[in-house]
Image (cartoon, rainbow, N blue to C red; front, side, top):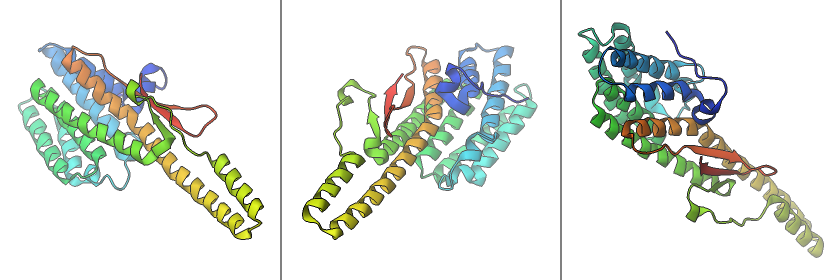
Length: 267
């Protein structure tokens, strides 16, 4: 049994490749004890495993620096979840496999240094505890995952600099002034013509190349943030479902028409 995320619609826009897991996790949180709950936990493990093994999922898209998610410990944790999925909650080994998965996730977390790794691992641990029916532990690890996810967002924001306008909070909605590449080139050209100095022309060209390179690097951080937002919103949705007393605050990154910059805001 496998799950496929919807190819279009608001859920896909908010969660990306994590849309199906968001739906299944929400159902598992809301169900009462009983057979339906046991079935929901199996569905939860199916979705959790499938999305991380899929062609567009976590393990296929992570970068080389996310070593903890490539480690044997993380893969052993997923293998244990596979075994739990196979035997089901009614089997006496269900708890053993789930406990082993949590132990391997704990070891994988001890190897993690990248905030992305830590956010992903702690989210897995949260759902492991949810599968055991331990909501307090689930809530704790969701909080941990959210903490690291926010660090990922803030780090990408800092590295992207003026390429991303932070409109998450009203107090931060201030106009940012910066010198555009067109203005910088115009000033360089004017200075060169005024002084008739070929050196300044050459320097202006080099400066333009350098600025274009810097812009390209900063835009790459925009792309990384865009790819991460679906997972960020998955954490938010699961935490909101678990608390039952607040609405989720989903992030969105909007490309500003006519420019090469973006705006980050809560939907």
